[in-house]
Length: 224
Image 1 (spheres, rainbow, N blue to C red):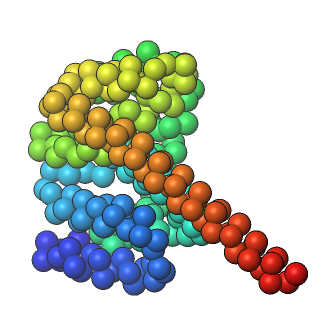
Image 2: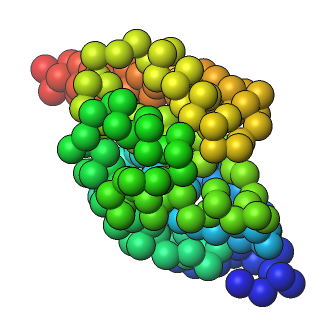
Image 3: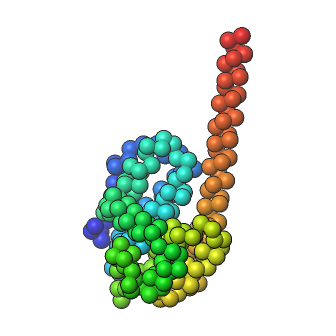
């Protein structure tokens, strides 16, 4: 995309691609991802590789749970990407291939491949690290989330403590040359925000259900 395009241009393109009302609970997610993707699209050292795609998909899927109507979730993701010159379908494909490959191997194997920047890894996983290997690599929180997500999908990861997985992602990030404190902060904030979002979605669903029951009761009394 042209460097002259502004955040306002990206937002305008998004609303043209997704002309639907967005519930207040999800507007912050949309605004933050729009701005983040816009800024990344203008970074010279940024390369939207598989690791980034995994992280972006994980963040979007985690924070858009409960979005209604459900059939609009994927068009919303596509619009967020296209508004900033990215191909959402291509991101989904890259992420799917990497996650499937991670799921065929043990947690220790995946950890070793990532720590060694893809050396000896299957192509879908080795290809994840093209951006990290660049001398002008630009770090994004989505890269840290991508690391964590891959570990979560490896064989045996479902039996591990979530905090232990985050610690492993921290160590791998440091081995890859990422700033450990930055990865720690981003993953801790990610975990905290997911918990808050889950609570907000649960509260929203309970409120909707209570309102439905109240309305049905009132309609029953009127009918009687």
